Image (tube, rainbow, N blue to C red; front, top):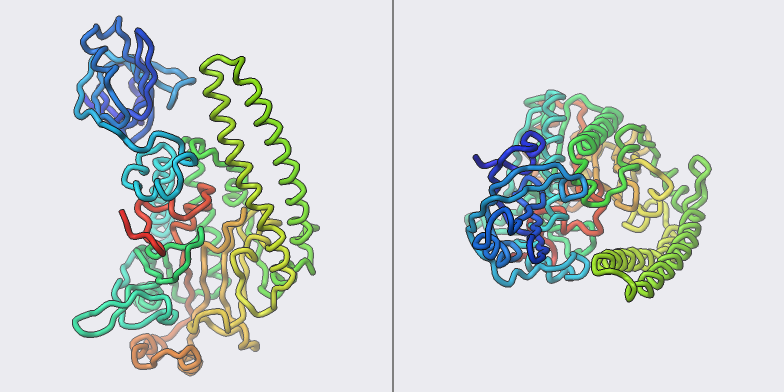
Amino acid sequence: MHQYISEFSKHIGHQVIIKGWIINIRTSKTNCFFDFRDGTGFTQCVVSLEEVGEEIFEKAKNLSLESSVSFAGKVVQNEKNLGGFEVLVQGMEIYHLAEGYPITKEDKEMGVDFLSDNRHLWLRTKRQWAIMKIRNQLIMSIHQFFQSENFVQMDAPLLTGNACEGTTDLFATDFFGREAYLSQSGQLYGEAMAMAMGKIYTFGPTFRAEKSNTPRHLSEFWMIEPEMAFYTNEDNMNLIERFIKSVIGQVLFNCKQELEILNRDTNLLQKAAFSNFPRIPYTDAVKILRGEMDYHGKNCIQTQKDDMEKFQNRIHEIEQDIQNRQDSIPTLSKGQVKFNEAKILALQSEQRDLEEKLRNIPKWIESALAFEDGNDFGNSDETVLTRIFETPIMVYNWPAKVKSFYMKEVDGNPEYVKGVDLLAPEGFGEIVGGSERETDINVLLRKIDEHGLERRVFEWYLDLRRFGSVPHAGFGLGLERLVRWVCNLPHVRETIPFQRRYGRIEP
């Protein structure tokens, strides 16, 4: 009977049949060692000449990377091996012998462009498997959280006749002779649905036509957008914090193997799951960013300077370690050589990352010191600001001029709105944006005009203020940005099975 690697703990000492693909091969005169994947996990399969006989052994020696195979054998526990188990093979069936599989090295050796061109194959690597498993866990945890809070999952249209935040970054299309847009957000429709159902959330693809090629931007991505009737922005922030803590906690509990594969330091994720999130008004956040105000004894500018010194010292340590390993290679065994070569590659990758940060930090400091009150935070500003925090932080009460027309004005101070951004630590920046929504129809009409939008296409939205208007709030979370932070990835392109971003629509 066909078994899966993820179920091996139930089958120790028993005969199994597993079906999957070869991902690594080591051979000797009497044994073949195959690293093997089946989609649920990874294991080692050992084909012994003594056990299987010459005919099967010779066929095993001809197996290649990504050949598809069925192995029959006994499961034994071996903590030193891939996945903690191995299969002592007694029989084999070959489905397909792959030839010339192109992905033969670690990601950092193959190059980003090459891997992106071969994304359909790149997905098979252990690292990408771990990322997709964590993405799946986050999706399941998001649904679980909102369902447990009595939200109703509903769907907003992907084709719209009006823009949520202006049309400059929207994909336009012809809708039977009329211009329509691919949705940049389901929020306006979410407000309508919340007026019917009380608490709803949408979960679907959204589209932005920004010509931006940063590590944070995709042209097609997935958004989670809850909307709640009778919620203030304070209620909104409370929900955001409970939500993030819940989904991070589920990943920590259910994805230990995947986080280990990614070498993810989980200390800050633990703090995010179990610590309170600081809440800082925008005006204070500006002072903290510019180094004019400390937060619990920490200063943003001085922290960046300290980082520079720390990174320089670490680079020196890495250079010495690499040199020592290179000098020792001529005296080492074959296995020790491979281990040290792999370690050198990892050290060189770390060095490149640190050198990149050293190039950026002086520019970040300059930008932070020159930041003008009233502007929106850029990527580097969010990086500098969050560096002194170990958990996500909430920045609230933003200048109206940098936020959307539907955000409610702060009582007595219409230059600011009741918006909130959740910024992740470790330089990952904004992952949640939300607000209390404006309920005064006259204020909305003024804002629509100020943003240069057409009143006509918002008549249905204005009806929500004409018929039973109530205080309400909501937020949007970008799934891929959440995955990037949780997995500690350098770029958002690895967070989605097939990336669609500026300059890339294939494969």
